[in-house]
Image (cartoon, rainbow, N blue to C red; front, side, top):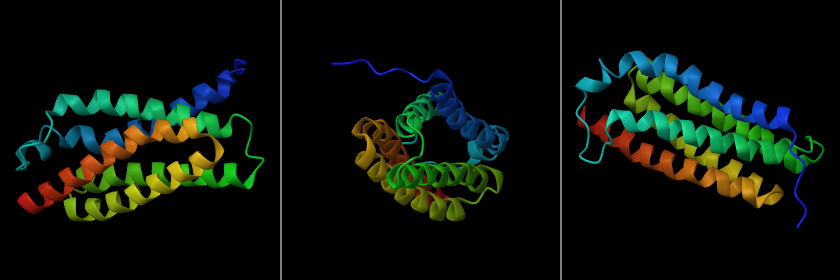
Length: 160
């Protein structure tokens, strides 16, 4: 087995791009957690607030590693381009969800967004599977977490 040469600028850029999405979303999220979110009725399976930051830090890192595996050789193929654009779309929806749920305090609008996000993550994971299955596997924890967040979003909408 031959070790792959790592393109460190692309690797770090991929991870930082994903972390930046989380940072952008945090502008809507952070102020709402101790105020609006704290006052909401939540289902029994809602995790404590301290769980979210480390989980998202890990997920954004895994997403960045997945992105790196897709772009490390450039966007020379149509498959790589489709994977890259699908990834960008789901990342944009990820940011939009934070704005809708926490910024605009609209669980119904956020629920519509997160349903689109789930579809976008599935499409992205499929596109990644075609190119590099490792990238698809790296996206799967994110998909599972967002599916959980979808259920949580629905219950918060219904309870409030």
